[in-house]
Image 1 (tube, rainbow, N blue to C red):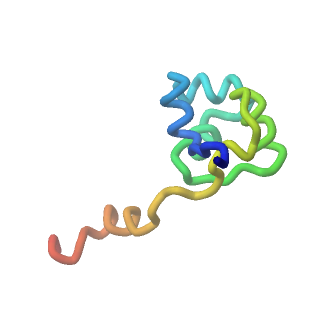
Image 2 (cartoon, rainbow, N blue to C red):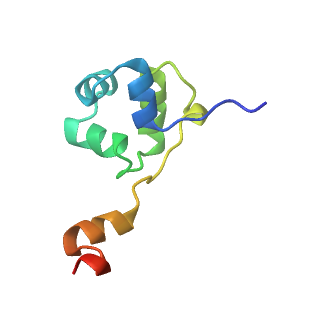
Image 3 (cartoon, one colour):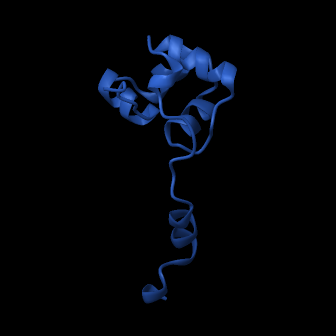
Length: 84
């Protein structure tokens, strides 16, 4: 069975860490740590290694990349067609 993979926000919840804690553990700025946790920013390979090390995980155990649905951003700005 392949290892279980989780996104940063799920891992932070499981480890009971806040974004502030995550920022301090990784050495990333709060804004960058928040963007990664929200799935708005894909960290570089070096940052992935640093993040995984700070959480005592292998980089392959973390799901990296954008997880935010871009449609939500547009609909929040302009509303759904049936609401207009």
